[in-house]
Length: 208
Image (cartoon, rainbow, N blue to C red):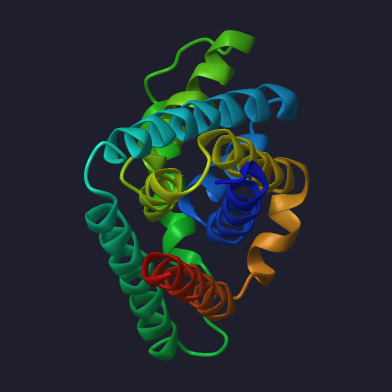
């Protein structure tokens, strides 16, 4: 397992899947209310920790028979890919990500009602906690676990962390400008295609 393969797979999958996701809009909303650098620090720290935990879980999976692990990985990627393509086929061409944005806004509002004084630490902690909770159980977490089970863990950590950081930087720096221009149908379709590609690659490697 060469680290570069895991790095490339994780970078592509995470960057595309996270763009326009709930965690993306959490960063967008928080950046309009608080200093961007502290929001970015909290968001990226949460995503890095989630990535490391996911990779560790993926490494535990390697203790099981490889045929079973690879089979589950193929099923996971193909299942996600087909589901995303099905969802995209049912969307209107002009549909944007209002649902994800509304969920992110609700989560931020509920959290901020509990904070009385805003310090640097409070901003970082809010961004960290909201992002970590939103990412837990997300399809990108499951995808990271699957990638870590069949690729070099260091490569997956680096690739996924860079992908998360890129999306977080976009969200914090200019997310408000591009949020309304992101087509949910396009993002969902591209994500579905990418999941299927990785599923097919995993299937070929399993049969080799």
